[in-house]
Image 1 (cartoon, helix red, strand yellow):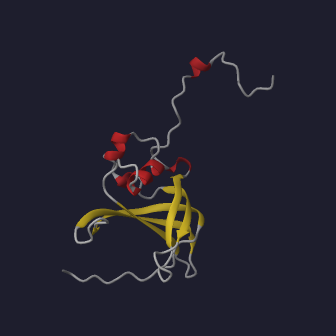
Image 2: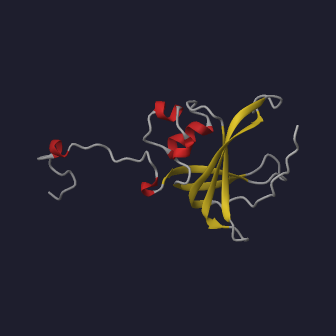
Image 3: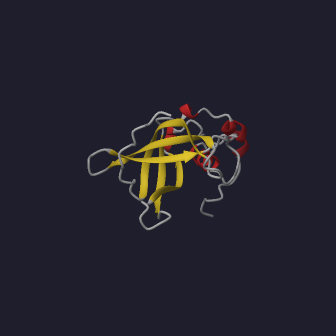
Length: 158
């Protein structure tokens, strides 16, 4: 088995609001959550914040998900539902993540304590949503303007 050099330890992304740009989604094999002896295909999502660390590098936020959409408790399902909210379930099940690479998302990040006092904090997303018109699947709903003609404005002063 090839030995890989560990990545240098990075300071966790700051808590709070961020504009995050998705820079890559890489397929990797990691130990299964239920059976650490078994390897599973996972996706590593790498986002870069507009905020910089003390060294001047953009802060990074990483998310590891499964590779199958649909389980309401899975991180991938939660993430897809936030990043591409107007896509149908069928589109999300067969979605090409390259379509959203380099798009920007608004996010709220929180820190969760590690399992023991010596473990580092783990950044987690509270929410993520497409930022402005960057997202391909954020679309205005179709409205038939003719059907609305003559309808009183419910917000107009009476």
